[in-house]
Length: 278
Image (cartoon, rainbow, N blue to C red; front, side, top):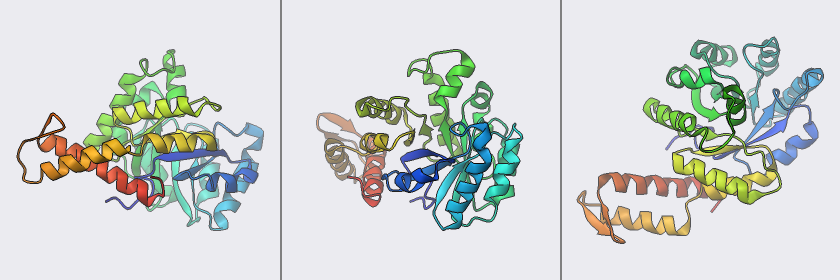
């Protein structure tokens, strides 16, 4: 089993870096990881305040992942400088990820023990996905669906972005990285919509989802936690396939690939149990 806390997490909740009054609430939301955001949710005139607030939070020993501003901006160096030396920093999320060399430089600057999540949200980033997965320090990919849709001039919809999502899943698997994180759902007042989005993401092979409100966390956990029916099916398949042969379970043929899928479901059950979500 993987040991890095970023690799098995299902829910990543953003909280604006200039709203320290919300940090504790986010940390207590039940989300697997909290992302202290220095980028899109913080206005330019509040960037310095956000850096100080995030630095103070980390200095108090609170764990957190931080989304810095794009490497292409003048804000990036100041963001990284504010994070150096914080032992409770879980890692950094780098937006507009496109250049693997730049991602490796982020890891080097902050220390190789600090993991990098590459947020792929541009056409160039999608085109460089294979190289990004191999960049030093990158432990997981995340999908920036809203930004990519704007870059491509298409709808932020399941069908329009299906190819891009599948590329992240495929390249993550080829590189031996954990399943990527799906992008945010803009719906704040309808957890059923978030649940459906998360279920679609899991069906494609994603391993988690980005959240922008604490109320979205439970829906994401529900989608990425195997149901009772899935658990029963997986247990029956593993038991039937223990001898390595082909068998019939619930009217379906069971052979090695099916057993491997069942084992992955049981691993999700174990991870969900460890996280306190059944």
